[in-house]
Amino acid sequence: PSGQGFSKSLKMDCTSAETSPASSGILMVQHKLEGQNLQYLKKGTANAESLTLSFWVKSNKTGTYITELYDFDSNVRTINKSYTINSANTWEKKTITYAGDTTGAFDNDNSASLSLNFWLGSGTNWSSGTLQTSWGTQVSANRAVGQVNLADSTSNEWYITGVQLEAGTSASDFEF
Image (cartoon, rainbow, N blue to C red; front, side, top):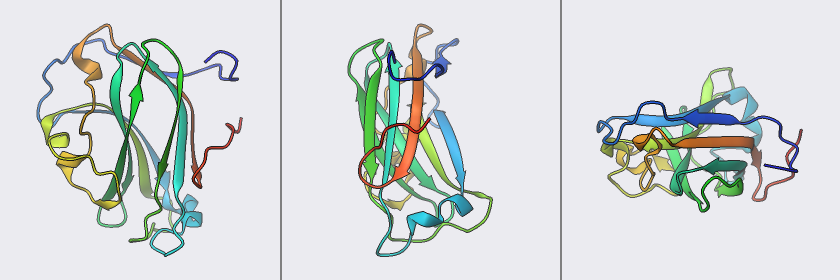
């Protein structure tokens, strides 16, 4: 986005169309975080910290997209939120807040404890239920409900930059 200080972005470019993904198909960008770097969130306590995700995104494919926090350590818990790309080929800043999780705890080690997932397409195994917008045991069918299929045309592209995940209920300026 012009004037925001970002010189690079991640580009997902559909080079082979998949108009009808297999029921188990997944298209996502995933970032895994180590448990030792998440202890300050106080997960599993009454004082669990909320997390706020902010990022800049653009795509020629408008519609609903899903972001997800996926906890590997506490019997696989998830929380999913939607955002909308409103204008084609226009950088838009998105801010999403997730409530703190008062159940379970992150292992204090260097293994993946939490992943931040940006869904870009899915089969019905992941989208046939009701979007899980509060923390709970992962239900496959509730993970990507409403998600557009970025893979349905070779003209589709999705860009992201300035991703920041931080404790609290508001987004701070991006820390370069």
